[in-house]
Length: 537
Image (cartoon, rainbow, N blue to C red):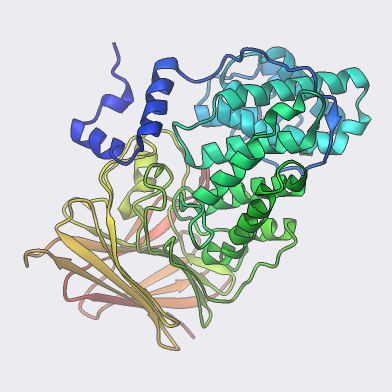
C-alpha cells in the first residue's frame, strides 16, 4: 500500500503546518480526505432558469485554439471533442481544460458545440470539482452574455439548466478546506450566477452575493492587496470581483453592493505596488506574466494605472520605488493569510528591478505545481534575489510538498521612506537574522545586506542577484557589466576584495514557460555586503 504524500513527513512538520489552520478548516480538510473530491453531482442540470437578467463581461481568455485543438499551458494541441475531456495528464492541465477559458476565441458555432459536447460527455469527473466548476461557470456566463440571443429556445434551456446544475453542485461543495482564492472564486461564480440568471429557480443562489461580499472583505489586507500575497492571483480575483460588480449587485443585495464596489476600488488602487513599467506583475510567489495583467485589468475597469510613481503597501510588505531610471519592486515579506500559504515562496526581502521599460533583475516565477525538483527550486530561497542563511542554502520557511509550509520565517524591523527601504527576516530555526537596506543616493541604487548571528559565531550566507539570460555579462573583478537585449548598459558592483560567482539558473515567466537566468552570487556576513547598481556610459 502506498503511503499518501501528506504523511511522508515527520509529525513535527505536520503539526507546524496544521497549527495555523482554524478548527473549522481542519474539519473540512478531514471531510475532504475521507470523502474525496466532489466529482459526482447529484444532478447535472437544474430546470427553472429561463434567461439572463444581466450581462457580464467575459473573463480574460486562457488557451489558444487551432485546427488541431486547443493549446493549454504551452502543451501540444488537444481537441476534447475528438479525444475526450480526461486525457492522461496532470491535474493542473485537466483543470485548465475544464475551465473552457478559450470559448471567446472560438467561432460561435464551435464554442456552442464545445459546450454541448461537455454537457453530454462529462457528467462526472474532474471537471465537476468545485474550482474548475466555478471558473467554467464564469466563462460560460461571459460567453452566454454575448451569444444567448442567437440561441434557439431548446438550446438556451439546455445550456442554462446545465449551468444552474453546476452552480447548485458548487454551492454544496464550497472549498472551505482550502479557503483563500479557491473559496473566493467559488463564491464569485455563485454571486455572478445569482445576479445574471433569471427564472423561478434562480433565487436559490441569491444568498451568495452577501457571502461573496463578506469573503472579499475578509481576504483583503488593509492596503487592498489580496492576503495570499501573490500578484497574479490578486489580478485574477479582482477581475472576478469586477465581473460581479458589472452585473449590478444593488438589485439583489443593496447592503453588499457598496462593499463590493469599495473592495474592487481598493484592489485596483494597490496595483502599482507590484507592477513593472511594462504593465505586468512582478513574479513574487506563484505569479505569472501574460495572464490578467495590471494594465489590462485597470483598462477593463475604466481605471488609470499609475506608473512612474512610488507606492507603499506596508500591510502586505510590497513597495515600489521609481529611483531615477530604475523601478524597484520590493517584496519585504509577511504572512497575510497564515491558513493558506500555498502560493508563498521563500522570497522575503527579494526584489525585481526594471531599467526604463526593461526588466533587468528577475524573480524565479513558477513553471509547475507538480511535486518535484522544479517546484522545489522555484519555491526555495536560493531561487530569489535575497540571501540564504545557514548551511546548505537553508530556506526561510519549512517548505514541503507543492503548496505546504510548516515552520515560517518572521519579518522584523520594517521601515520605509522616500529614498530608503529596510527590513529583516529571521528564517525558521535560523541561527541569524538577515537585514537588508535598499537605498537611492540620487545616482546609484544600493543594496546593503547584513547577516547577524545570534551567538557571535559566523553563519554561512549567500546573496544572489538573477538577471535574464538574454543579457550579456562581462565580469571584471568586483564589477559585472551588463548589456540588455534593448542595448541598455549598467553595472553591478560589489566590494573590491570579493569576486562574483556566476552560474546558470532556471526561471519561468509562466507555467511551462522557461526563462533561464544568470545568477550572480557573493558571500554575506555581519560586517555587511553592499552592492551597487549604476548606469554605464
